[in-house]
Image 1 (cartoon, chains in turn brown, blue):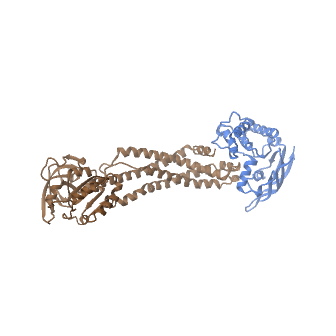
Image 2: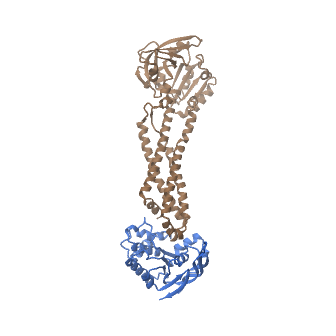
Length: 402
Length: 227
């Protein structure tokens, strides 16, 4: 009966209760959706970092990442690549030969672009580069020095298909070379910032220009389970002690910290919103208690134990919160599910320039909903305590006169 | 007959710049089955006396015995439990729970007493029929007139089978017809069911029909008349 009374009590003032329930639902939705937006953005960033930039782990000469000299080649590259590729978690691998930061010039502009020499088939398996092509062909149709550039590079340097682009760099002997490449295709990986920093040429062409007979600067490896990146990198590091085997989390500076911080993001955002809502609910319940002073006094007068009065007000507050909470969670789930597949197009917003995709797919782990549900419950408990204690302190003889 | 209520040297003083003796050295015995009106001008101490007898307020000195139980020896929680089991209350403003029906309001006290559903159902039906509201069991207070609400309050007060019922100005908010009607019911319950009523009132018609009238002035009993 106490639960029934509590339930009916919250509907005495329908407008006030509805406002609180809507506020709680909207507040929760805003917090959860904002969290899902950022987490979706981060998840895409991680996926992009792994699939388009770093792969799951990379192998280099131990000094390569520091010095980036063309002669720092992995010895027995093909053998090592084949050994790594035979691991059960490895789905693809590729060997790259890289010209780091060569001077680039076109008729429009001069600058610096990392030129990566690739095996087109292997690269397509690791980074899906072929699928990102938006114009031209994937190294077909131009025999001499074909190059694949990003749409951002094309725009910046005023290039189009078959345009010429000159690279000036040092070979392994320290001699300066100037080589002209011709645009065979234009790609867009969805990450303009990274796209603008690199271009792809055929590995054999780059090797020949650098004077490398055999070997790669980099072996990039894709796994079927990203969680295996660190243990597998450690395993191969132990096996190839004279090389550097490094997982993507250590390649992408700051990603490890960002991912760790993401774990707390929902709690912080939703926590702040719930903290504000706590006072709204507390105020509403306090008003409800003050308005019903005489009635609560009567209940105590006729013999309702104080703990039952306390319980009744607690239950009323919990009802109020636990109606709004699930509605907020449901609306959040539905909107995140919808935009999680439809995506939110940010257009030409600055996110792309920061290395994030222009289309964000909000995402939230199911455990985060449980976490938020628990937070709402405890917020409701906290909000209930003061009004309940206030009711408890009423003296029936005074309360029934009000 | 045995005393249901007995007060000994009961006093209540409200402290202030000038202390107010709301109840002043009252000795009173009320026997089982009595129908007693406590009368007196405003500020004479009627409500304070009823509150102390009902265990809602504590005296400054003296003691109240209800069926031999000394209320002063009970702590607050024990007093609440004592009120639940031994005392029925009817308030001037009815004080029903607005979100419950007449049936649920009457049943509420029995639920607090953990009485079985079958017994609750039987007793609620009888009580509401006794007060003439057998056809209004599922009406909420807002759907009832003042007189009907006060009759539900009487049924609720009787639900716990109390030793006696305390009623503070029960007819004060009622029109004359409803007041007469309520009084008829209270008298019938007193006569047929043996329910002891103690009530404060200003209403001369109620005073005329009371079988015992205790008059208070300045917190003291100045007249105690049995008819």
